[in-house]
Image 1 (cartoon, rainbow, N blue to C red):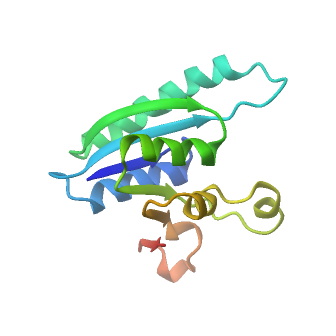
Image 2 (image 1 turned 180 degrees about the horizontal axis):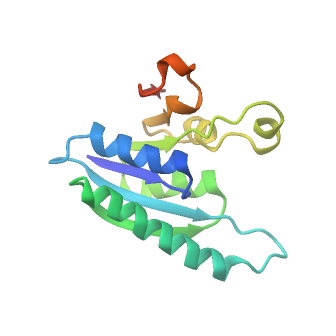
Length: 150
């Protein structure tokens, strides 16, 4: 099973890595870690972003391997986040795309949109959106984990 895990270095992304490592069969799953560096006009930050992306990918790979997972590839690409995740999933023939949900609401969700929802809408491949319940649950429910499979 080929599992694509797009990462962004956030706590949400790291929680999703741990969840995926615990969820999929370690003997069968091969993980592909992807960091998408958005290319914005008139900004010369790509070189810095590449250094940062490489560090995050190394960290994510170590997290997965320390949990006994096989990471087949860990790489970055440049471009639109949603387009690149969908393209990469096709390129590696992913059986599953696993994304974390930042849980944005209100104005920030309206302005920024939801990458995970956009990938779900645009990719013909199965998409799992993982949400860390710690951030959203009432205090008496914390410590439990939940996920949403769409």
